[in-house]
Length: 121
Image 1 (cartoon, one colour):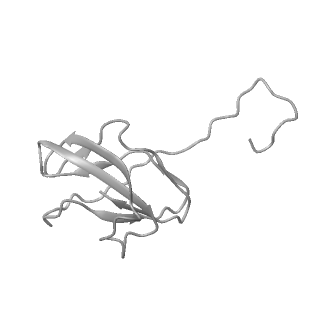
Image 2 (cartoon, one colour):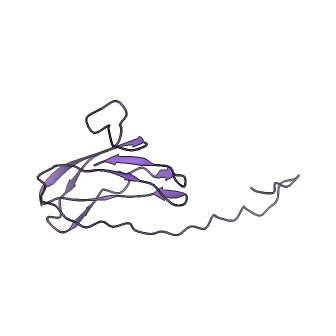
Image 3 (cartoon, helix red, strand yellow):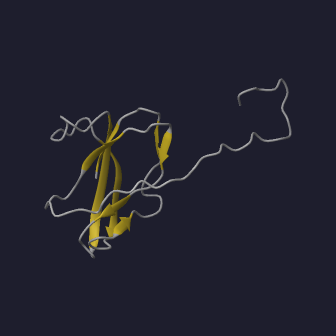
């Protein structure tokens, strides 16, 4: 509460307003790799609530997601700085389709403006 009262009130604090948006990337593939590393640097405070993956498979696929503070660059071959946040299995939706993670599999990630966060999916 930005201006606390001296005594409790019967009215709750108003809920914070926020906008839900989707960040999409091209579903390009063909590298033969089974993963992707990338950084996110938000312009303003951000909460990442969910993530989908892209896979050619239409069978069950094991999904692991790791994060680390800062950039993934120069840490591609290191295990120590990474922290696993997702370990789940999904039914792949195939080439050119997004495959969502099961509900509750992805924990919300809070980032402050200009805070660089690395992901390894």
